[in-house]
Length: 224
View 1 (cartoon, rainbow, N blue to C red):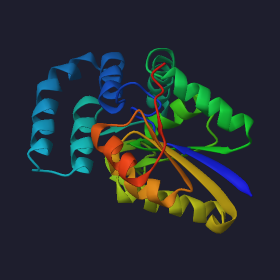
View 2 (cartoon, rainbow, N blue to C red):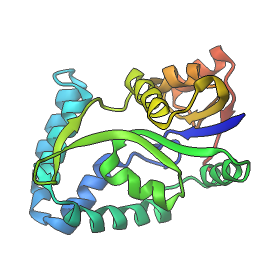
View 3 (cartoon, rainbow, N blue to C red):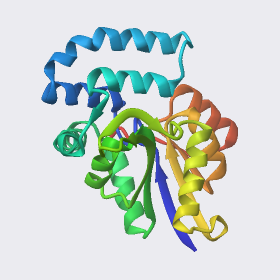
View 4 (cartoon, rainbow, N blue to C red):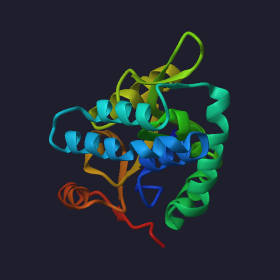
């Protein structure tokens, strides 16, 4: 039976979130004047906290503010490469890296499934030697530039499971013939945890820890 190991990314493999740090990194290296727009980004975050907009819309607006409404792939490549190197050096959990290597050595197919944007996640996945990526996609304009609009769903909550299942279908993988383990820190990933054969609560948030205790899911701590 084929085995697949699926990992969430932010705060599962990394110590902290990556989306806002990526936007700041990109602005700093591409257009430092955009850092002056950070107060507006914070206002947008407040609007999300007050439930005035969706999580997807929050991401689109902040990307437009700090990265621009569109960017060519040629401009994007060095930004994502340098950010992936920074994540690798400064923002990965030692235990997560050990587990990734253990799953690789066991012959499991490694999949990174995250709500973060594919536009920079692929560079991180390559650095970590993942086989595949399921992530939030960006609309690509007719001029081949990456826009600040989400293509399809934000890969979060129930949508993450739908997108993983869509990836299975696209890859021709029969779910009944594979064994899936899944690692995540956040309770929003409960649908994927329930669907997986071997769910692990990794560095769990308070809600995820409580959920893991109720469901009997193993808890792993990767901080050291």
